[in-house]
Length: 498
Image (cartoon, rainbow, N blue to C red; front, side, top):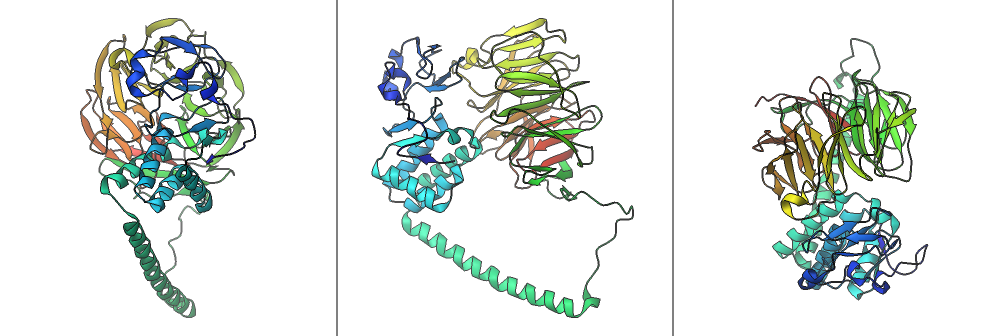
């Protein structure tokens, strides 16, 4: 999963040679007002429409390619793509910051930022940075587009911090020296610990035996009994943690979706690979079924009788436990679905690629439609939208690009906007999911933890499961919160009252 140059498995698509150069990420910002209202997708030639001059990117409804409308880097970086999916705005902004770090002579810092974004080994990161340093073309491979976007956005923040602090090569080397010094101290402490362990082995009477489980039952090796993980135990107590890194039962590679049904069964799914695992209320592995392994899985949801799965813009309905497909979303409300949520009355609220909100009765008939719900307010396109519904039917949209929550009444009237980008209270670095509890409080998972707001948008507090990055959120019928954290699932009992 890295940015590569040179030949790739397929002939790279040279967007700069297409007849519609406005879609190639090469248009400077000062000419945005002259962009045409419509043009063709460079991947499939389908017609595309530009909502406004402020729009950074549009998505093709036919081939699902993201098309950048201008050069967001401002650096003139020469890039190409191997597939029909161009690099994201975040990826290009990251390259711009890396380029600036290199210009200031901070090669070590640039390599570190690149590695944190793409998870490569040291040699691959060094090679990529040297290609950027030499001004060679950068080719985005297919793998880059399924990489964890959280890492890319965190790397952007890290790079910005480096540039603001003006860290030079000497400071970077000094930090390396400090790390070596700390490693030496750890080695000495470890040696002392090893000596103590040896003495304890020689004198077994000094060893304190662990307390036995009075029930005599064996705990699953993937279930952790750790109630001190919460960073804010006065707000939320961690009562269950299960999962490890892997592909075995109860293991995950990149769990980002979680749901709980009426019986207490827990469902968790990896973002890619198609694995959906089923667990009992105590976190014990029950079964597994497979979805399409080539398509990202964006949402698990449950109603009174089924498990619903969102993949590739479509929703399928499954039998709990077995995973047998028993249907699809009733009717065909929109061509591409970004997210969905169930109301207490059985209604289904979905949000589409164009931020259109549609609410359906269980029989599929439409009871509400709000077109361009976010861009109609901000005049800026939102390509990443999540939805949650409270007990009154109010709708909350999380805009990933806007880094904000948009609140609508049950009849679709816009009420409020809250949250913003940043590191302060109630601000988001990279928001991932949204959920609403039985008190109407709004929970937003973010790189920095879980932020909690009152229904009117007032920031209340935040918490996190230790150092875990939280992606998917889900509540059970008792009001307990579940979080998908890549290789683990964490259950919280919430303590506070509004």
